[in-house]
Amino acid sequence: MDLSDILQPYERLVEIDILGERREVPENNSLLRCFQFLSPDTVSYSDLCWNGTCMDCQVAIRNGDKEKSVLACRTDVKEGMQIVHMPPAIDLG
Image 1 (spheres, rainbow, N blue to C red):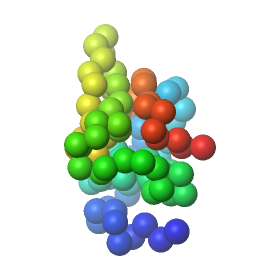
Image 2: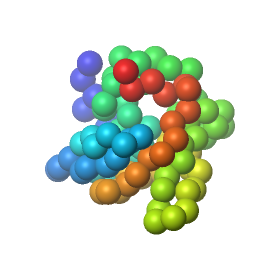
Image 3: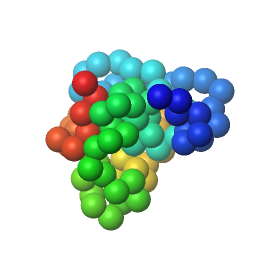
Image 4: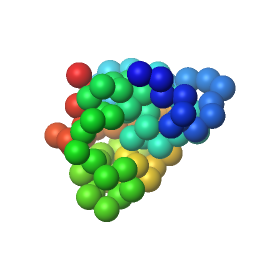
């Protein structure tokens, strides 16, 4: 699957932590698009609205000692991000 038509332009991949596993994803994109980059077949065809209405893409991000819930479709990826909870609707295989 060619994702170049749906990803925002990027020059490099940034490293993030998803449930204790280091992964590289494209900068300048939402977390949900990054998840789609990692697993195009499962995320592309999942039952998500992609605009925040369903709230099924809510993830928890750790920042120091605190965790914050955010919507993956409305949150841009940042290098070093730590995602500590993933919803059942997002299967990265």
